[in-house]
Length: 197
Image (cartoon, rainbow, N blue to C red; front, side, top):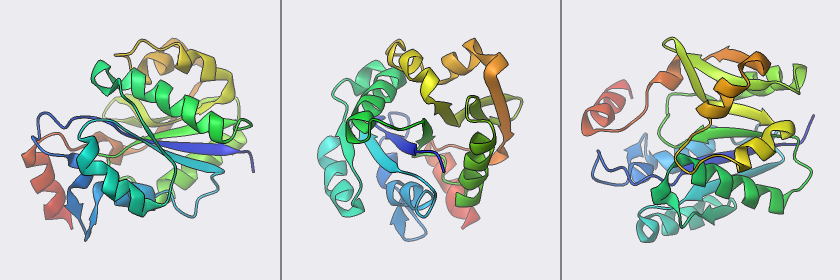
């Protein structure tokens, strides 16, 4: 298996929710723990959590997860800063990574099996970007091969991974993942999530 790392992006301020979405309880654990749990047991060489907002609230929970973390002091400037912060940190841990799976802490409906399927597609097409597709669009979770690491490091602070997926769309394989359409931004979203459990 190729050396693949996973970066869980969990640095946002949850401004519309008004509290730390990373720590919302679902099925007896935080979304942070749930998201990492969905990647446990997969053929990953390295995992890393990027955090930023609500640092003092979140750090005690990170200590319990027993995975490397990196604090992004520039989290306010946007998703691009967290992508770059995470990529730099994970490559310092393991420089020979051949690809990175980026995922978000607030997409709890994506299953371990879907991540495994994405990794299998990457194994078959190791030079392509593997991007989730849902509701007529695409985005995270996404696997970037190492050939795109420099483009990720050159991202504008405000820009997310979608900008690179669009730029190199002729090198993208779309992976159907309707569950990626659901994320948690508001109390209504969280109430809907609780209704599913």
